[in-house]
Image 1 (tube, rainbow, N blue to C red):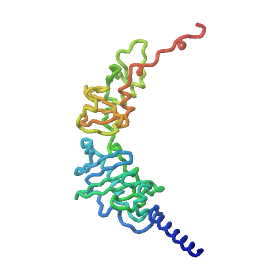
Image 2: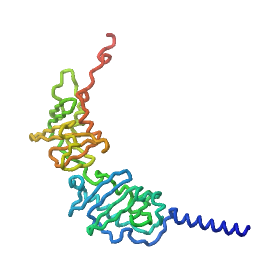
Image 3: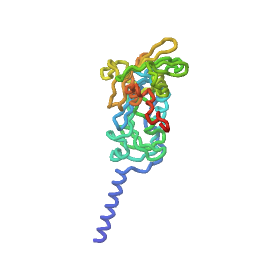
Length: 322
């Protein structure tokens, strides 16, 4: 009986060891592996879609010598931000194998329904790759997997931060800019009224100030600075949609320059599904965009009192002995 038990114990240990080998992530196996994506060439990429695990995605397309956002009216992408990512993808090697079966995919965040990043790459010949970027195993060690393969590898060539799933990471977010020194007047109209500001010398003043009102010049200057150089969170196309709310905007900003030119910025509806950002349209741009909630609020919620110093309190007006 003792000998039989010993044999059974040995068999059990071997079974457990085999199970662990098959289903548990292994330490990185070093070897002389080749590229993860065979024959991959950055020049052959025609489209790149980046998704994160939170339902965010950005589609980047190559049109000749230019990269664009095809879902945002072909808004231009900065090619110098795309090229480094494609070179990093090309550099991924298979010399650090850490798992061989699907059982580890969720744990390493490279599963089809549970991932950190998913890069869908379309090539000139119509073929495509799905590349999963997963969790980090430390500095310079990101789990990666190709969709049609069970094997998971570690790489130091790329990480999830290199593959941002938001359009703002791939474009110039400066929507427009006007020379601040050339801007001599601004009008803000919102639900709280119409506010006219004029630059006199180096200072901004507000029309219709009464003798007992004092302007908060820093508030006006800050608003003007924001109005003459506006940043977006993302472009949303060249065609106006009813959901933008720009046919009845929440705020309209009119800017006038020394040369007599006039420019307008309309702030439309807020979208809770888009981080509470506002739709916006600048008169000289063909693109509709979204601006951050903070930026939109500054134009939409301003009241006359926001631009005025509070009146002195009775205590401040009184003097000792009165």
